[in-house]
Figure 1: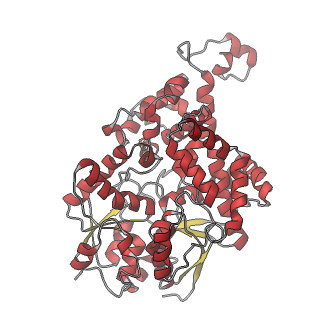
Figure 2: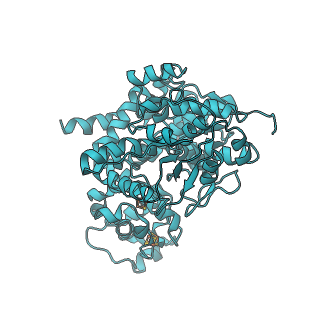
Figure 3: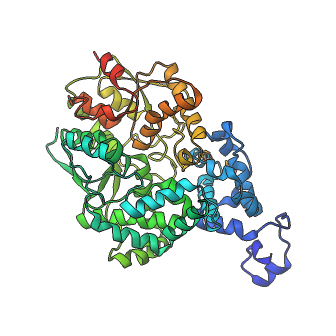
Length: 193
Length: 305
Ligand code: SF4
Ligand code: SF4
């Protein structure tokens, strides 16, 4: 727990009290990880609720961005990462635009999703996109109806992307493989089948 | 009118070339009429989708976007693009890598494996923001390019999210672009085409599709879309325009899906700004492949005086 206090003097840090109230299952590293991945100052939140008030997802679900920010500050990792509402943020950035503390709640959500993925908690559609890109370079690949339409427009059937130049695809696969993303996606997707 | 041609590497993304190719065709033709030459960015991939990839692993998102940026660096040409999602990936990663040494080093570590290096030598701009930039085009020049003014129709502008937000991080060269609470510059562009831009409630609300929500919980995404459609129809919009093929997909296919799922019938045509501009510059509906749209554009076309 000492590390959670974050004083640079290691000894003093151990002797001083941790000013955060924490439940037994709280993880102090959660906040730090979120701030690092999301590059934002989550601990500055004073719970004004401007974020939830700006959120298009709030009026139609139980998703509350302010609650997720609080969970970040309190280290409630399990609560946050296993909540199905985590995936209801459209990343519209309205909350980030309006937060009076210059926090980026959207990027807190993105960081939490990154951490959830490490626990294999992720909706399937995200993984399908990874597979498409691994195969074609495109998240939304070309198809025959579209090819015919393109030709009628005087465009080439394949756009000037990896679709026309597949020699670029191995490079993309190398990047994804560097992070083990394709294997991870395949594994999680195969679980449900 | 200056005769100078401005050249950009044209980053296509996925949805425009692969679902609404008329946007791509229109962007190339309409820009040429404005002295803006779009050259292909060969071998580009998905930006990659900021919601899908950023949610899983931001490091992959940085590296994949950086690969696209390096392709343009190798051409020594600034990038322009026609999609807000692409803008978020390509503009924002370019900006982040230029300003965070550690991030850039990490990304270059990976890019080394494919003999690439991010140097930070180019800029990224959304094509519509370039149209508004007086130094390159501007409203007057845009109006001068119009041969078939879109008179007699009301158009609701959907700005989308990722071009303008988060405001604190964005930087725009065009004067007058940047407000995220009630911007009016796209309305000025619409008016330059002869159409009447209309103001509606909660104009800056998201289309609902982003962040992977369209794939995760389509009813939730469509409910957000439906709210926007209600607000737009209240002021009598004959069409919706935007600068984002993903928003376009959400509004266009979304209206059909809303009919199926909620039993609410909508028929508001959805046109990317480049498609509108194409019509105003005399391109035919066939030149724009408007027949690929889910919602028929006929009522809108018939209403044009
Ligand atoms: S708007 Fe900012 S300070 Fe207010 S509750 Fe949300 S994150 Fe906290
Ligand atoms: S970015 Fe996410 S949390 Fe913030 S207002 Fe938009 S949907 Fe809500």
